[in-house]
Amino acid sequence: MRKRDLVIIGGGAGGLVVASAAAQLGLKVTLIEKAAKLGGDCLHHGCVPSKTLVRVAGVAALMRRGPEFGLPACEPAVDFGKVADHVQSIIERIQLHDDPERFRGYGCEVLSGTATFVDARRVQVGDRVVEGARFVIATGSRPSIPPIEGLEKAGYLTNEDLFSLRELPARLVVLGGGPVGLEMAQAFARLGSRVTVVEQSSQLLPREDVEVADALKARLESEGIRIHVSTKLEQVSRHGEETRLECSSGFQLAADALLVAVGRRPAVDGLGLEAAGVAYSAKGITVDRRQRTSQKHIYACGDVCGPYPLTHMAEYQAGIVISNAVFRMPKKTDYRVVPWVTYTDPELARVGLTEQQAKDKGMSPVVLRFPFRDIDRAITDREAAGLVKLVMHRGKILGASILGPHAGELIHEIVLAMKTGAGIADISATIHAYPTLSQVHRRTVNTWYGRKLFSPVSRRLVRLINRLLP
Image (tube, rainbow, N blue to C red; front, side):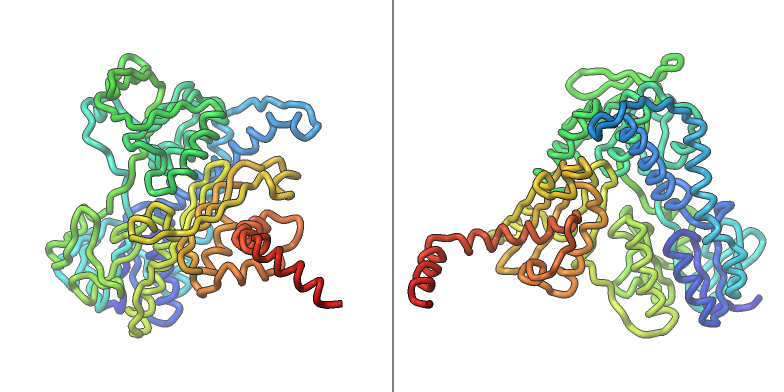
């Protein structure tokens, strides 16, 4: 039995980043993935198919909006089987980047099967035992299924089988008003389903700024999506081809399909973590800021350890693992500036603190707002819904929420400003090309300077200067 320098369990975003770097640097690397293909949940059941479907639905919605642009209206005839084929084609195209042969070309051994720790230095894959000097656990997460009476018997969809549908459900109920639930609710509604969203919390997207979340709720409702907040699903039953849902407050819903999108749970089952002496909880594997588990030669990254179930965070944590486990150079995680995006239309992007979170920390934040309806590029594109909300305290940017066109792209100017310590004066002094959506940042921060510049004191000072100087 040959001892490997690094054994990686999980072929998703985090595991592949570590495997690629370590193998190309000459280490003896073994990558173990239990699924038939590499790429993980993001490629096969998450980000890639969902954003592809969101794009398809966006095109369908735009076709209907022809009269807004002086063009005829066009109602798309949606063949959901062809849509599903298109989604799969995009997965297959991106899959080429995650081809096992590519990694074998780097010198990485790729094994297919379930890895279970025998002890802290060995894992078993089928009939083979692999010994390693260091390990990385990057097994990701699975959909969280709530204990609702009748749910298992009645049947339901999750992100793991949603993209296998060949027919569009006439009536779709989405359980969960988080990012996945809302993205799919809007996409299916635009493709022709009658969609209802049920959310137990008092607002959609509970982690987001309430003002911005409520604005998005109004937009979704304007598209015909029915939304019930502060509502708990209590019982599910199946009657022929129909799913019936009993909700709190005594009202009922009927659907042809039920999508459960209430969150994720770390994929730790079957890993044999107890045998390896690796500590974990319901929140996932416990790691320190160097991504080390309770066994210092065993690392973890991505959804399996949190705290953010985001692909870009898995990749970021993988970089921390590479520094510590491959280069043996101590490096710690820094979560002070973490952006995330909900890919509805309009998109909702956030980084840092919301207004309420700043107040909860005892601050008295200054809040700057600017609507997209006053941005010329948004007007020309007929995409003027939404706003930028910037939260500041003592001249520092604490956070931002952007609800608007391409918010996921626009948020990165604020991310960079927060990361580098740049202030609103730097944003104001930066030349932004016209006409672009990014002008919204300069217009937002200039609302602060406008308050100062056009104050009575400033007006008196300007008049005095112009009287005194020729």
